[in-house]
Image (cartoon, rainbow, N blue to C red):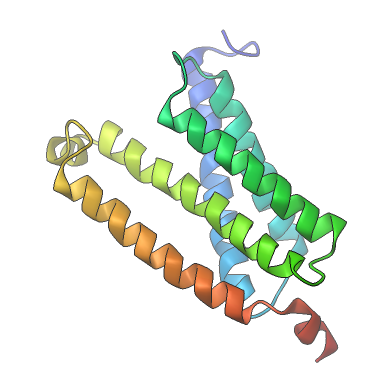
Length: 166
């Protein structure tokens, strides 16, 4: 039992929170392309992505796993994003700190989604049973390139002070 729930229920709750974080994060990312803060979506993204990492730590695991390392990195990025967005209101360098940290946290969530898909979906698992085969590595490589491009576009495009003044 975890927080009064079975392990299966706890895992399901964790997955649902993760998916909400990913969807809301993609909305926030695309909002950045138009210099929109999307305050409600941003709050949902940050909250659910924090909860994703926190609930990941309470799921059964032995030792320091790659998932837990991703969780630690994600929480550090989310702390920076929260500070930049709410504490410093995206002023000065905090704008790019927010973009970088939010995009990295979203990227890490999607990396885990892809890894879990290859572990849990039979036809994908057959393509990469050990997690080191080319199909998984290609999927992760494509995701990395996509997020490098999207992150750069967001960094260049996201100037909410200009959007608010217009």
